[in-house]
Image (cartoon, rainbow, N blue to C red):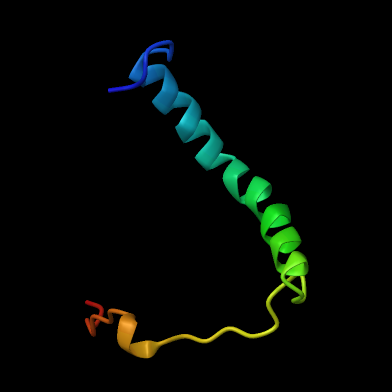
Amino acid sequence: MLPAGFPSWRTVYGWFRRWIEQELFEALMQPLARRQRRHGGRHSTPRLAIIDTQSITYIGVRGP
């Protein structure tokens, strides 16, 4: 259920889906994330990534 004053849920979902397909949220969030990192005294983009292999699900299935 959407707040009063919003269009129908189908209309809202249609716009949301379009924005997701166009990667609009990524385009909006990247500059904000860079700004926040600089404000915190860090590089604007991460220089290192760490992957915790225990949190990745792996299913060992062979092909046909």
